[in-house]
Image (cartoon, rainbow, N blue to C red):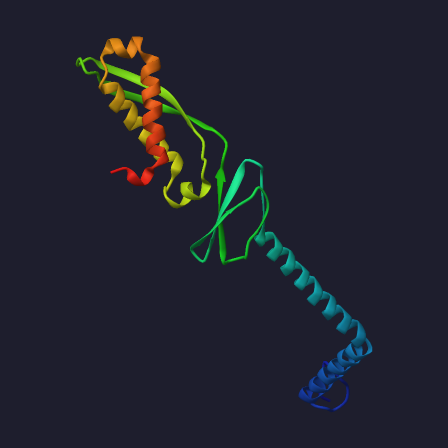
Length: 196
């Protein structure tokens, strides 16, 4: 007598296994046909969930909210579109790129500068500078990093103006020197393309 795991009798084990496989497949097929409507409804629900998730992701990538003190400079495929904001800004995902610009007054410390006055006296001075972006488009398009550029021009101007003054003038005419520094910085920042 031949032993078989899937059946009894004298049938070969290979035949009984394939017969059991087709029985299991048939039961599974009967289950699917009995639940066919449920399977179709489930597939539709899954497809709708995927579509809604993609729509939410697309909306999240295309909607930006800017605060009152921020502006957006928008580029479409590398070309300048213009300034937008504040409020809701709509972008075309992958095609549009937005750069945020802060319009608040920014203050920063100028690191201590070593200089030699006109009467050959070494001095170390430090200062505080502040600036505010007036034209967001020009600050993005015409200057690579406007904060770093403003800091560098403030340091250079401080050394230049104070290097032309005597030590006595540094101590006694601070208001005049401050006014001169402010005029030079304002003229430099107002027309960055004219700097050589």
